[in-house]
Length: 625
Image 1 (cartoon, rainbow, N blue to C red):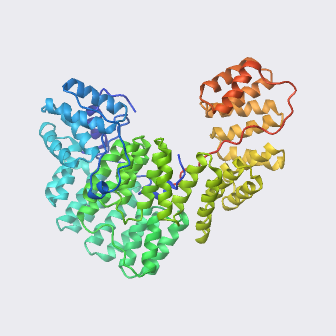
Image 2 (cartoon, rainbow, N blue to C red; image 1 turned 120 degrees about the horizontal axis):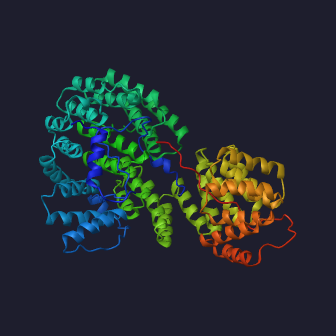
Image 3 (spheres, rainbow, N blue to C red; image 1 turned 180 degrees about the vertical axis):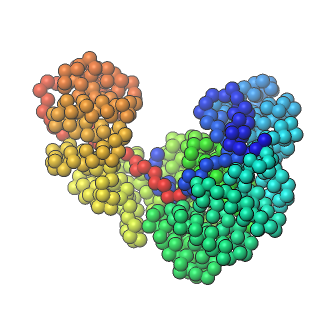
């Protein structure tokens, strides 16, 4: 049986059979990992779209030494095997990963020979990062299911860690000729050949990945293998080819620049980093590397042996899987990668990001804590931790935590913008303005001021009733990023609200809708601007579009109710107002909605300044790798 996508999908689906199917602005792109465009995840990929996400706890002395910010809800195991099993299913359905792991382990104690229970406990341990248990369970599993692909993957990785490369190849080779088409097994096997001292065989195997979708991945790993084998000409050729094919991927850029610097050309390495800095400014890894080059310090290579090379394979596939929605697959790849290379901060941050996305916030905090203290991404991890605390409703703790980061790193733009966003979210507009100003001043020192900082400070000025300053910031944001739809929306709506620059304002709103036609908030702004100027038929048309795009927003439902009333569709107006009331509007808005439900709208309206402000939005996450 080959190590194929289908076989592992079947095994994992059977392992969890019977279980239910499953924003903040802090320059999240700065923490994203390898971005392999077009790489299909083969082999051991676990494409399990389910709400059963298994436990996540990594252990390290450094993590234990850091303050414990994650506070999980307590639970107790029971004496009943059936009860523990059912509790594990419920915990999985609720995405309570720690409880799911604990209850599956307890259930297995009472039925240790049940192959399906062994498999579930194995997957739980593996995704939890409890590697000793995972390897032990994998061994038990393959004695009962000799072709279990995931178990062989885990055992192969364990063998690599122990430098038993022939044994690892045997695990990866289960299934015969079909495995040669499998990117996971092929690359891991290639690194095993290198570990055995056979780089020629390793390169030959990598080059069997002929699909052009794998071209960058193929050249990247061929270059790494050649470099570890001291084949400098081949390493130069392959790594340069990978870099030339994709200059937008941080991991690849970082690897190539370090290789170039190691070969005695630090000036060229600096140019490589500076070119990436134009794509994604001020990434912590790039900033740190440029500082080391300027100081004449050597840059260490990321991959020096077969163990680290194998970790790089698993990391790349895990990062790609996370972006493609295979969260469970991504977690397992990243766990195995970190088992081989525990200091890879990009892998740690990628794993923590997955837990954030599946709303396992306490586990995300624990994983972020694993980033080494002196790593360039340590502050990024701390900023994310502070933002998660706010998500968990621990606002005061979040503010204190972020202020401490800012005090420790007063020049860190990410920390400043995160604190400013928190202050703005809690209507502390004066404080937010001061914080954004510090962030803007810091950014301007490097000539890389962000349009988003001006946009958010502009919002804070507008909410603080300092319109001239807000208007200036919105205009500056558009200077830095012409036709930015969020800024066009806010400035255009504000002008309509004030009855000034109407032609330009409507042009802005139409442009924003053209750029983001599926954004219900932006479409709502255009509809509500038409309403405010008495263009009720046009308002209805746009607001109905906005409702189709964002049906659960109370403000948009309220707006559509008003527009329906003005065109004589009063029964439908009451329906929309009632719906808006039931969607949890802000207290002030709810009071006005209840009054309209009881009394309707006054007659003979005169288009005037609106009571609502444009819907505030966060910028979309950038993809910088």
